[in-house]
Structures are given as structure tokens and as C-alpha cells.
Length: 335
Image (tube, rainbow, N blue to C red; front, side, top):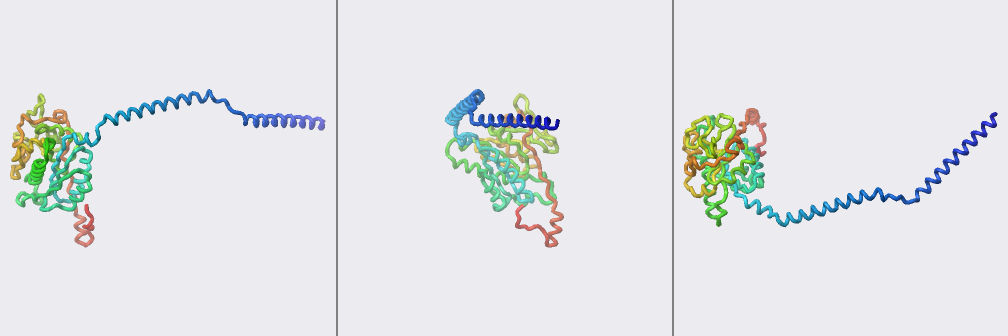
């Protein structure tokens, strides 16, 4: 019985071994055979051919566009230049304000920044900032007379600020343009941008088409959410303002731009440093434009694109205490 069982197991083992050996031999034979994969490659070849055709078509379109498109510099120079006149004065936040403003201006094509310091001389801080700004600029300076300067503790509205600096910018602009030749020398727009405001890039494109004087709303000004010209039938008919709406032009400095032609044609138009509170803008605009000639921008003066923001004056109490102890910050570090 046991012998018969062993014979059966031996027979099964031999049969299993033979079947396995035959399977191995068959597999080795198949390794040397070529696989006919034509039916798999055809869809792939069609896809590659289609993509190559699409690439060729796009390359041809790019070549045509390069031929017909004007050079980038030509597009840029075709835009009227925006001359931005900015008064500035030394204070703790001056460099921070000018840095923020200059980096806004970097995004505005064909802009010329006229930066005027309230100082008897040009300062290295402002000069270095301008040199590193990447902008086209003119660096000027003129001091405000002592009797017109605000003293510590005076409210900001007590006396007009920046009148002398804006006038110095206008003086340079008129002299520089007079020295230029050709009709292009009178193409452009002039904007008075304070260094502590916030500007939408859209604002500069709105003002670029100014024919005489364009106007728009200003946010967060005059103790109101916004001040703005009120437009009816495409014309400015009155002003939405909370203080002295009877002023000739109850506008904020950030709320208008003037064409370069108008500035050059009205050479006596300037800002009156002795103007009563709130009348500084009117003192200039009265010599340039009438109410009926104002050009409403920003969707008929319905959109706010500039805000009369102000940086909080830094408190230096701890710095003063450390300075008294000889432990103050290194004054050689420019802030």
C-alpha cells in the first residue's frame, strides 16, 4: 500500500516537473520573437502628426504677428507723457512714502516724475531713492518760507502746504518744454500727486486723454467718505463736498489733472501760498479753466480711484528714552 502511494506521488511529481519545464522552454522561445504592435502604434502616430501640424500653424501665426506688430518702444512713446509733480519734505516716514509711491509709478507707462523737496538743497536720501527707482525723473528743491511753514502742533489745514514746490515743478516744466522742439513737446498731462496718497493704476490711464482739465472723485477726504464733482448730461454741474461748496473749485489736489498744453498756454497760472484754507486748488485752476470746461472721468465721476490716505506719525517715545541713555538706534542707518 505504502509502495503504491509512493509510486503515485512520484508520477505526479514527474508530470508536474515536465509541464513546468515545457512552460519555461515556451517562454524562452517567445522572448526572441518580434511583436507586431502596428495596431497600437497607429493612433499614437496620428496624434504626433496632428500636434506637429498644430505647432507649425502656431509658429506661422507668431511670425506674422512679429511682422505686423509695432515695436514695444514705439507703442510706449505714442502715449502722452504723464508728468507727476510731487512735493516732499523730510520726516520719519518720507523714505517709506516715496518708496511706495515710486513702486506704484513703475507700473505706469510713459511717466515722468518731478519730485520737489521742501529744502534749501537736494538731500542724499531723495537723490539715492530716485537714482535706484528705475523711473524717468527730475529732482528739484525749493524751501518754503519760514512764515508759511507749519509749526509743531499746528493742524495740517492751518496753512497751504507744498505751494512753492508745485510752482517750482511748473516752472521747470515750462522751461524744459520750451526748450524742446516739435509738436510732441506740448503733448502730455500734468498731475499733482502728494506722496502720502494711494493711487489706482487706472487713474493714470483715465487722465492721459485730458484735453484741458479732467476731474474725478477722491476718497477719504474732507471728513467724508469721498468728495466728487456731480455730473449731469456729461457736464460737471456742482460738487459733493462737506465744506464750502461755494468755492470756485471745491476739489482736492488729487482730484484733477491739467493738459500740458493748458499749463504752457497759461504761464501765469500758479498756486497762491497765501490762499485761504481750502482755496489753494482754486487759486491755480481759476487761471486755467472754467467750470463748464471740466472733463469728468472715472465713469462720470462715479468711481473712486485715488484715496487721501495719511501715514500715522510714528511715536518715538522709547527711541527718545534710549537716546538719552546713549543706547539709541544708529543714526547712520537710513530709515
